[in-house]
Image (cartoon, rainbow, N blue to C red):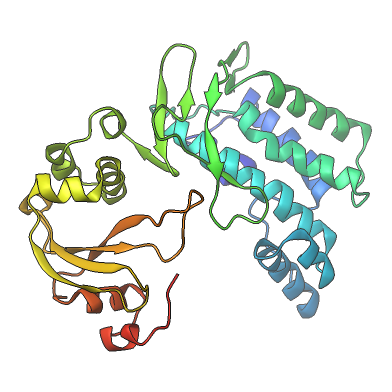
Length: 334
């Protein structure tokens, strides 16, 4: 039951103790506890303060380092494996793809959805621990993990009931890109022109750089639709789709202030008022990225700025938590 709650596998947890979903979750939980030594929602018992502190800190430290860096400073190999294998896969598959698909589904109260291929992190952590020789398992636990592996490699989501099991087709295409600053192979959904997740029946989800967007953002973006959009990230994605220069002209944005970017030689800062349709007194700061993209160009992007700021340099400083005068003294920003 803790596994169902911790993973958010159902919109309601009022399940019968003898239900198929409850029995499956209990079996998986017990096997995982014996293999990995962790429990869903587990807190480290404070028996030895130093050991407890190391156990708590190790996963966070490993998340900020490469595997070799973690090994070099002596982080527990189990913490490294959890971070590099389980957590990275969970981020890419479970929190990324599965969560995106969930946005297109109605909540199913009291019904447990298992995510098939998008639960590969559960299988991978057990396999990695065994291969590295830092965990052992009984024949029964091996059998449980083998069943999970078979499901992960053969089906999409599935819903078990007492007398029947419903299995869904896997997506026919998934498009991703490396997650920025990811150290352990994390990926996020992305495709600039087509659906990032596609199913055989023609349904799917548009995702741009990890942001789930409605179809119009890709197929027919316009200043009018952007003005009606309340989600800031969707709005930003749609504007970048048609280009900031085109959007500024079409939406009739008023330039409030502009200045050379003191923290980014060759770049310019432009501060605009927002359209009345946005129903906000915030402003938009247009700037040029200090770092080049993979193709060599420097991306132009917009940031929402509090309405009380009237200077482009002050606005740029605000994004760094600095006053404009302090920002102007920077040698170079990134």
